[in-house]
Length: 176
Image (cartoon, rainbow, N blue to C red; front, side, top):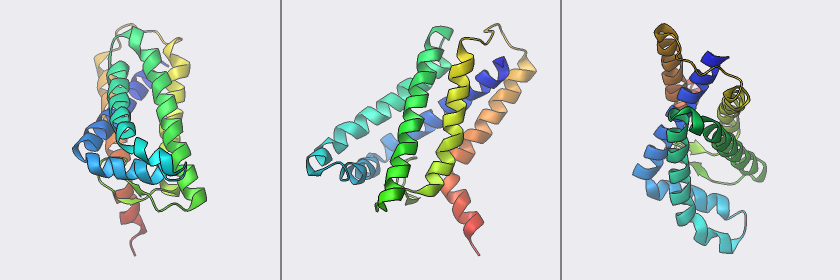
């Protein structure tokens, strides 16, 4: 279980860090995505798009750091990761059900309409966060063997890259 939790920590930290940096670099697109989602709440909620974008970027970054930090920050990091991924998945469900025309700028650049593919992408991330949260207290936090750490890091890199480029991969596989 220790290695599964380590891989979950590294993968989620990678995904959240890449997402936070990309959202910060494309702040206007991030704000526009949140504006489109908040439009569903009501006209007054739209004024919260800018502060929501700032808060989202900060929470993603802090969560990534917590997951990479000392053992005392790991459990709160996994809790935040569960909340974030559940929120992202819920936003994709709402956009899908309401047929909202919201571009997914989840990794900074809008690549596709927020919808089913994002539910498919986020569900395994939610599972990783839940796995990590469930194993965070039970796992032995002794120093793992170097080959296992390298394997966990390699898996985390693959998960991060596939997640960040999920829309591109889906479009490539859907092309005739």
